[in-house]
Amino acid sequence: MPASAASIHEHPAALRRNFARRALRHGIRAVAALAFTLSIVGGDAVAQTTAPAAPGVRDFGPNVLVFDPSMPTSQIQAAVDAVASRQLSNQFGTQRYALLFKPGTYGSVAAPLTFQVGYYTSVAGLGALPTDVTINGHIDVYNQCDASNSCVALNNFWRSLSNLTINVTGLAGCQGTADFWAVSQAAPMRRVNITGGNLTLMDYCTGPSFASGGFIADSQTGFIINGSQQQFFVRNSRIGGWSNAVWNQVFSGVVGAPAQAFPSPTYTTLAASPVTREAPFLYADAKGRYRVFVPAARRNTVGASWSSGPAAGESISIDDDFFVARPGDTARKLNDALDRGQNLLFTPGVYHLDRTLEVKHPETVVLGLGFATLVPDNGSVAMSIGDVKGVVLAGLLFDAGPLNSATLLRIGTQHGAGGHAGNGGGNDGGNPTSLHDVFFRIGGATPGKATTTLIVNSDGVLLDDIWAWRADHGNGVGWTANTANNGLIVNGDDVTAYGLFVEHYQQYEVVWNGNRGTVIFFQNEMPYDPPSQAAWTEAPGVDGWAALKVANSVTRFSAYGMGSYSFFNQGVDIFASNAFEVPATLPLASLHDLLTIFLDATHGRGGIRNVIDNTGGSSTVANPDTPVTVLNYP
Image 1 (cartoon, helix red, strand yellow):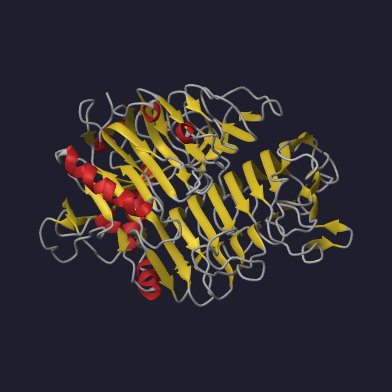
Image 2: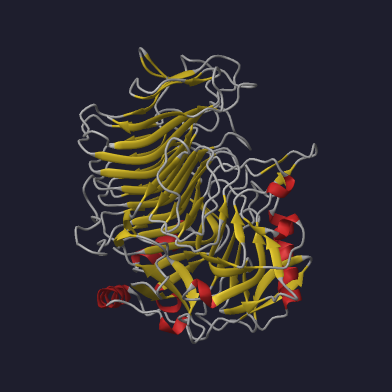
């Protein structure tokens, strides 16, 4: 019998932390419970309070739609369809939405609930467990088709699905054969339980089609059809099987994963994940009060964290402990809340910042709904986390502003400060700072510049689904327009990254200076647009820049499943000497399952001469779409 929201619990240590945190607050209390109903206004679905809000009541604003199982399916269907009609083609728009489902059952076999998820839309259940919310129907992402009827999923970014059960039913024909999640980067699926059918990661109904990679964690599914997904990462889940590989397919702590087989097929499979923390999530308790659950960190884990009931962690009251931010709130107002020791919940929208958001208290939670987006307008750092332990960020998009920022997000101010991942045994992962589904964008939506998007100075940080993207299409895109040197610089020791996507930066895309770092799945595309070899050269005799550079001072570094691809589209030969560069002094077999690929011989020139440190062979216009691999290095 599934546990309900009433059964979620905290460990004593979490209770102590929660008491200490509340001591910092200034007595902010809600005086009434949140209640929502749905209406259709001018063709758009909006969430409205059932009565005028009393002073102090926290509501989530018009772009958070909260559904109740007592609502007619037709009413819910109209609301979610209204959001989808706006967001399916809204790749660089400013509207953001969260569709939230209270515990219960929605739709039926006779009257299913079926809908699509568009850009900047988060769909989530509000139960303590994914089994507390059941959708009888489909929640799908399909290909996008252009005027020539070319249909692909390569740009299906910035959407998410979490914390619910989909009982696949209700559609006839090809689209009824599975639940479709044909996505690419920044489209995570977490805490999802799929029953009654398969899950497909490609839209074969309008195929042949292409998709560019995704992320699944803490989920249970039936058979998964990978299809045309060029790369994909699955962590700590249970799956009913996996159909095939294209290029880089990585599994960590996944029951039912295919066996290690790299390079034929290109499966990289780790039996367990070394240290993890699952993403925080919003839920409603037994009295209907909103809370955020922050799972505890764990070590050496396999399968979904909730398979035997609620996992250990900390439950935090929205009413008591969070500042609920709305678009238009100033950076000063947000910093005042952080200074009081409050956590932040960003409701959907774009937040323009005239100064840095400063996270100074340990164990602060910063959670975004509906891909809440932070933009530094004046070249400041968008957010800085102090030298403190246990900060958790999730569900945020950082968009570079028109004036160059030195970085968009900085974790710790000095190497070695902040929290360690912990050295405890068993499932004790300590209390690391962690980032979950945190994404960065340079250009695309608007012109933007940043020298580096993410800098990690603290030790023991967990990075769990990161996409840092210097845009290759959209607005303000060009070699001298959306400038950015590095996607990620890691200075801290014992940093672990799962699902690291970094693309198109103009120098080293990732620089790793810390010791004992671990990367499990890395996906990279080198910049498409260097105008000449001279404009993109690391040093005399070294063409281009490596996708990932491990500093010569590093003595231990581990990596599993690393892919770097090239496509240079300026009509001239551009080469990178190496995709990866690491110290020759690393222990034997520190890096596993590396590959490079040249993407398009019709429109591209040049390529990558070596996989790693002058080893592994070339992927160039002479051998396009063919993985060139290195199994173990050194």
